[in-house]
Amino acid sequence: MGTLPETVQFPAKESTRVEYGKALAQLGEEYPGIVVLDADLSGSTQTNRFAKAFRDRFFNVGIAEQDMMGTAAGLALGGKIPFASTFAIFATGRAWEQIRQTIAYGNLNVKIVASHGGITVGEDGGSHQSVEDFALMRVLPNMAVLVPADGPETRAMVRWAAAYEGPVYIRTSRIPFPVIHAEDFTFELGQSHILREGGDVTLAGIGLMVHQCLAAADLLAKQGIAARVLNLSSLKPLDWQLVVDSARRTGCLVTAEEHLATGGLGSAVSEVLSEFYPVPLRRVGLKDTFGMSGKAEELLKHFGLTAEDIARAATAVRARKGRP
Amino acid sequence: MHPISDPNQLQEIAREIRLDIVEMLYRAGSGHVGGSLSATDVLVALFFSHMHLMPGNACYPDRDYFVLSKGHAAPVLYAILARLGYFPREELMTLRQFGSNLQGHPDSKCTPGVEVPTGSLGQGLSVANGLALALKLDKKAQRVYALLGDGEIQEGQIWEAAMTAAHYGLDNLTAILDRNRLQIDGRTREVMSVEPLAAKWQAFGWHTVEVDGHAIPEVLAALKACGEVKGRPGMIIAHTTKGKGVSIFEDQVKFHGVTPTTEEYQQAVKELQSMSR
View 1 (tube, each protein chain N blue to C red):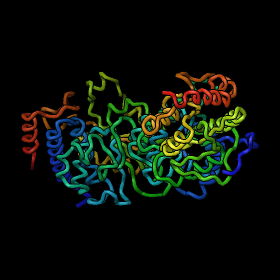
View 2: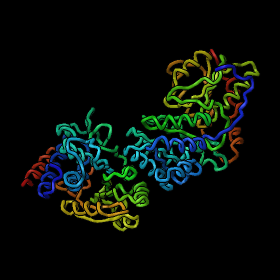
View 3: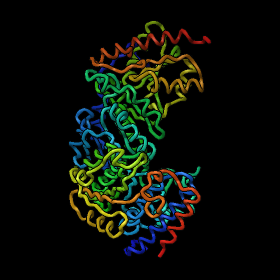
View 4: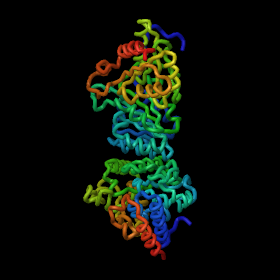
């Protein structure tokens, strides 16, 4: 990993949905089999970039997410590599059973890349903020569930998904956030990475909470606490060996996700810990509540999803280390 | 020999398929009799006379595709696929059993010739659209067929798919609606009215024809006509009788999802056998 700076600096910001749109338009050249579907949100999901370049391989189905998932399944059966995009809440909520019955049960080669995950959707409010999609997708057999932590990881994940045979769910975000990976980052299913080494506590993040974990590690370092930071972008399959290794080495963990604290990363990690290596855990996430309107930063603060919240959780969980 | 053009021969196949359906379901002890028997003539006409297939090879690359959107009619599809030589006929008697390739509802992972997993209603037409789009992109001449139930079209997704098929001008798609007028809870007109059917599909931009779904020559003529329409998907509303072919099952709500008792089974077999030429 090399020596990590004492103070985390994030020189550049990128939006994972924009990077998805760009990557898809690029891959369109390489993969003539890629077709793209959208449900009247192609400007927001950024699939319009592909639509512009490959007009006859883009299908807008109108405001009909259930039909979109079925059509994508049919295109996969016809030998195509369909990418279907809409907002995360409509993709996973409105069309959950369509995804289950045809795509997951049929184990079909459909890539669902949903934008506007989590509360950082902001002003649109709770109706449009998906805080349940990790849970909804994670319970489906055959489904891979991935959440990139920045632009380079998004590009790597989309490239990986195009080559992989099987159903995949990828969540992207509305707002730009810091770039933490190198440009040449590559993605492998079920393989997660240690972004920062430390022996006192593990901070395991996903999506835009990963850079918050790095910032939290920085805050903790100032208090003399060395935190290991993980990017668990492969939510399913989860890199359980890395989770167990971290539990063994640091003795306690904090998970951080822009999602309900139940059903998502916190749950996945606690499943692994309770079965294989029980240690104290704190889950940073929304507590049995829906989102609301506001600026992304205001909402992250309101719902306790900041670097300070993660650092506080880390201090609290460390205090429980080794206690019965 | 495939395809078969003699209507009498097709009718005889339909009779034998009905015998298979009744036996499979009697042995399975659960499953859907009525909606399998109502769709038998339509599907026999489609599979044995109209669709481009290669008996004995479910993976023949140039085949036409079929989507059983009303997945609970799996028994009729399985009986047809076995007769096409995609798997041994003896397997039919394992329907719904633990470890069987013949799941209660169609599962494309298990059964040769089943293209799409169905069972949850309202979803097959969207998948058929996707297949039709893929074929068009590849400029292939193959066609896609889908069988819908008349209760099934109460699902909203059907009408999303109806719009999509017309919007994209999917003239390589023909859907057939098994209008048997019954659903689990009763008559469709009592549970949830679906009429006017033809006017609905026409309004959605489909070339729509109505046929007697037990008159094989009529069904074949409609399939041929739909194949010749350009720029629009085809809908064949097949007027049928639920439980067709066995007097005690015909037009009986009860036989949507209830299998026959031993006496009923024996009577059904006797009736179907006596229909032999």
